[in-house]
Length: 330
Image 1: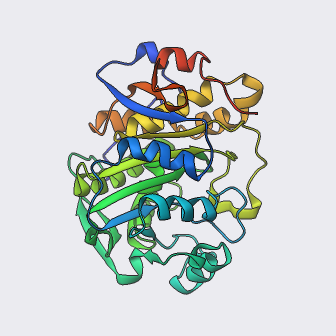
Image 2 (image 1 turned 90 degrees about the horizontal axis):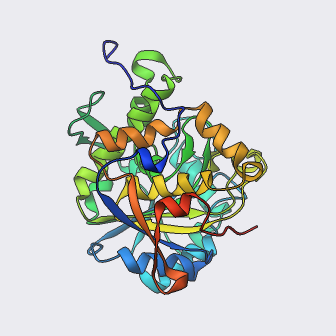
Image 3 (image 1 turned 60 degrees about the vertical axis):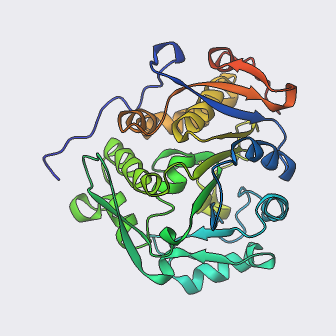
C-alpha cells in the first residue's frame, strides 16, 4: 500500500468548460420540503423496487442541521412506505459508536417515532468487491446491506471536516462502511493512522462507494438536499460551525458524480461572500479529488444538464447554472 500514490490537484476546482465527456441529467427544485424531496425522487425512481434501503445521516444527538425527520417521515409515507432507513456505527468514540448508544441517539433525534432503523453492522460485516480500485480489492460493509434490492441515497449536502464536503459519495463511502473494519480501512488506520493523506482519503472514500454501487448496479438513486450547509458534517452535532451558506434546493440523479458535481458547482456559482467558508473548506481538504477520482473510476459524468422542475422542466445548461442563472434562496 505504501508504494501506491494518491492523485494531485484536489485543491483545484475544475471549471465546466475544462471538463470532457458525456452529459448526465440532474433534476432540480428549490422546494425544500417533503414535497420537494418527492418531486425530484419521482423523476429518478424507476430503478427502485423490491426491498428498499434509504441511506441517510441520522445525526448526532440534537444535531440542528440534519434533514428533518418529519420531512423523511412524510416522504416515506408518500413514496416508500415499506422502505427501511439504514445506518452504520461510527469509527470514532461517541454517541453512535456502539449499537446501544446509536439506538439511543436515534430515539433522541426522533427517528424511532415513525420507523425502524437498520444499523447494518449490528449484524456483523461482509466484504464487497472493489472493481478497478488502486487501494482496495474489497471493502467491509454492514452485513445486512446486501440483503436489500435497491438503495435510495438521501443526503444532506454540507461541508466535512476531513472530506471537504459531504455529498452522496461521502454518504455511501463512509456511511455504508462498517464502524470498525470498513471505516478503519477508509481512514487508513492499517498504514498511517487516522490521518490518511488528504487526496488518498478522497480516493479511499470513492473506492468504498464504488463497492456499494457495483453491488446495487442500476438499482440506486441519489438525492442531495442543499439546506443548512455548515462547513461541518452532521457528525459534529450541536458543535457544528455556524451556517454561512444560503440554502439552494434539492438535486437528484441516477449519476452520483453528476449530482455531487452539480451541488459543488452551485456552491461555486454563489457570490463569494456567501460561499467563501464552504469553498475554503473544500479546497483546504482537497475535496475536489472526490469528483475527479469518481470520474477516473468510471462512476459517472461531471458534465450534466439541469432540469428545473419548478419551471415546467426547463433545461438549464450547466455552464449557465454555474454562472449564476439559478437563483438562490437567502
